[in-house]
Image (cartoon, rainbow, N blue to C red):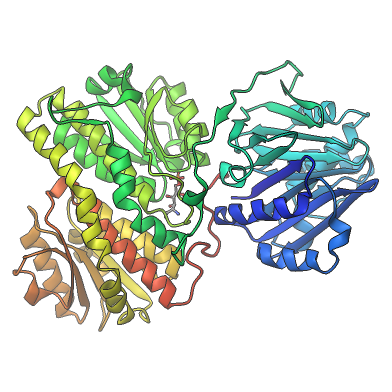
Length: 610
Ligand code: M6R
C-alpha cells in the first residue's frame, strides 16, 4: 500500500527510482510520481495509472529529469480520488519542499485549517499535502528540524521522504507506523518502503523505528527522535536474494509462488523437527514456550488469508494441545472490549508484519496483559518487533498480492506450535512422530498438486464464464473453502462465497441454480459421508460439483461432475495440500478472464492503513 523510493548519491537518480517503483508495484497503487533535484529546484512528474504511464510521460523530455537526488512514490488513494493533483510528491507553497508519504495523517483537517488561516492554498485533497505545507511553514533553514517539529504535531501513521530546494545534498526520512528502510551503499543511500527496492544496490540497511527521523546527506547519516535525541539504528544484512523477487521463467509472481511452495515449506520446517526426540524445536519460543504450553486460552488473529490460517491453527491447537482457542478478526478485536485474562496468549499472524489492524489488535492485547506471539514472514517487520516472541514463516518474499506460500507457511508454523504445545501436554511420542514425519512428506505432495496445473486450467476454462461460485467444506476443509473463495474473488473478480458445507442449507442453498460451480473441499476424512450428502443437495438443484478429492477415493465419483485429485494426507494437515489446488483454480480463472493477476484492482499487498 503506497510505495516510497528515495535516492541520494552519485548516480543518475531517475532510472534507479523507476526500477524501485517497479519493484514496489506489487504493493498496490493507482498513481505514481517522482521529483528529481535539478538546478536550483526540482523537476516533478506525476501520472495516474501504472508506473509504465509515468515512465512514458518522463520519456517525453528526459533531459529535464537529470540529477542524483530524488524521491518517488506509488499512491494507493485514501484521501482524494486517483488523480494527478493527488499523486505524490507534494510540494509546499513557501519553502521549496517536496514530500512523499505512506500512511494517514489523522488530524490533517485541523492542521489544514490552521495552515489555511496563515494563507496557504491547497491544490489537492490529500492529507499528504497538509504535511508538506506544515514542514514548509516550520522551515527555518534546517529541514531535519522542520520535519521533527511538523511530526511532533501530527497524529496518524507515516513513512515520509522529504527534500528542500534550499538544502541540496540533503534528504530527510521519518517513520511512524508505516515501514521505511534506509539502504547504505557506497557513498549513496537508497530509501524504500521495503527491501525489494534496495537489495539490487546494497545489502546493508536499517529499518527506521517509529518516531525516528533520519537525515541523509553526502557526509553521512544521522538518526534522531522527534525531539532530536540521537538514536542508533540497527544496521542489518538483507537476506533477500534478487532472484527471489524476480519472475524468472514464470508469467506471474503468483504462479511462481504457488510452485515455490514445496521449497518454501521445506524452509519453514528446516531445523524445527527433531524426529529422534519426537519433538519440535522453535528457537523463537525458547523463553515463551512454557507460557504457551500452560496457556489458559489462545487468541489467534489476522486478516484475510492470515485469518484463514488462524482458523486452521485453532483446529490444530485444540486437536493436538487441547488448549481452548479462538480466532478473532484483528479489526474487530481492536475495537471491542476484549476479555484478556491471565494466561491468555495472543498470536498475531501476518505475512507482511505490517497490517495496520493486526498490529493495533496486538498492541491492544499487549496493553491488556497478554503474552504476544507472532507468526510473521517479513523479518524485522513491525509486528515481529512488537511481539514478545515469535516464529518466522521463512517462505521467502511474497510478491503476488494474492497470498499463497505465506498461507502454507502460516499453517505449517501453526502445526509446529500446536504439536510443540501438544507434546508437552498429552500428545504421545508416537503420534507426535507420525505428525512430524507426515509434515516432512508434504512438500512432495504439494508438488503432486502443482504438476496438475494444466488439467486444472482446462477444468476451470469450462466454468470461467460463471459469475457466482460456492466453496464448501467441513472441519479442517472449511477454512480452506474460505481461502479458495477469497483467492477467486480477489484476482478473478468472480463473486465467490466460502462457508461450512453444513451452513448451505441455512440460506445459501437458495442461490444454487443450473450450472453454478460449487467447489467441495472433500478429501477423505471423518465427515466425508456428510460432505457427499451436501454434494447431492447441490446437484439436485442443478449446481455443478467440483470436488477436491483424495487419490483413490472411488466413492466420490458418482457425486461429482469434476474431480481434482490430491494425495492422501491426514485430516489436520490436509489444508497444506488441498489449498494448493484452489490457488491454481483461482490463478487460472483470473488469467483466463484476462486480469492482471499480480496487481488486482483496488488491492494492496499489505494494508497499512485502516
Ligand atoms: O500481510 P498480512 O498477512 O497481514 O495480510 C493480511 C491480508 O491483507 C492478506 O492475507 C490478504 O487477504 C491477501 N491479499 C489474500 O490473498
